View 1 (tube, rainbow, N blue to C red):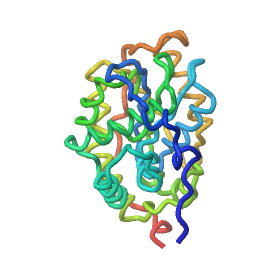
View 2 (view 1 turned 90 degrees about the vertical axis):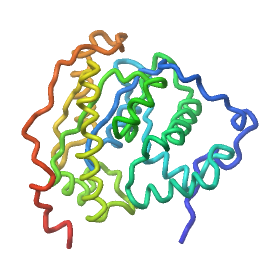
View 3 (view 1 turned 180 degrees about the horizontal axis):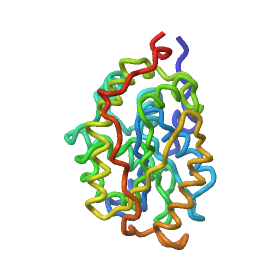
Amino acid sequence: MDHPTCPVGTENPSEAERQTTFPSATPHWPALLLVGPTGAGKTPLGEELARRGLTGRRTVHFDFGAQLRQMVECPPPNLLAPPEILFLKDVLATGALLEDQHFPLAGKILRWFISRTQLGSGEWLILNGLPRHRGQAKAMEGLVSVAAVVELVCPAEVVLQRIQSNAGGDRAGRVDDDLPLVQRKLEIYHSRTRPLIDFYRELGTPVIPLNVGPATTAAELATTLEAHLHQVLGAPGNIEPAPKLWSLPNDQRALGELTFPEFFSR
C-alpha cells in the first residue's frame, strides 16, 4: 500500500513555521458555518467559495475532515503528540464526533490552520465540519464569530445518490462511504449536528437553507449563497451578524422513515 504524499511544506517546515505563535483566542475572524449531512456538498462548496471569494473578500476554507486526515497521514511537526494522532485515527475510522473534553485538540488544529493560512481579521473563514454539536459551538465562541449559518438541505436518499455518482467530485479514495458508515453519519448528523441550527438561531445568527439535489453543483450553490448573503448582511463590507431572514423547512422526514436506494447496497 502506497503511503500518502504530504503536502509541500509539511515534511520540512522552516524554523519560523516550527515556532509559529498561534493567534490569540479573540473573535476576530468572521466565519460562515456550513451545516449539512455527509455527501451534501459542503467540501466542494467550501472549495468553490475559497476559489472565488465571498462578498468581495478573501475566503479560506477550513475543512475539518480533510484536516483530520492530514493530521493522521502527514502530521505537521511538533503540533500533535503520538497519542493524539492515534486518537484521530480512531475518530476517522468510526465516524465519531469529538466530544467536549476533546475540543482542545480540535481548537489546536483550527488555530494552526488560521496561522498557516495567514487569515486576516476582515477575511472570511468557512467552517466545514467544526463545530458539529452545541458543546463545540460554545467552545468556539472565543475564537471565531459565526456571522451566518448555511444549511445544505439534502434528504438521505439524495445523499446516497450524490455519493454513488460522486456529484461533488470529492468522494474518490474515501474509505468512509460504505453504507453502514454513511447511515451512522446521517444518524449522528440528525441527532447531534442539525440542532446547531436552533442554537445559532437563538443567538440571532441568520440561517440560510440551500436545497441540494442529486446533481446540484458547488458553483450553483455558491452563486445562490452570494445573493442571499448580500441580502442578510447588507453591503459587501458589512460582515457583522444580522437578524434572521430565513427559517428552515419543518417538513424534513425523520431518518427512520427513509428508504435507502437498493443500488447503493449492491
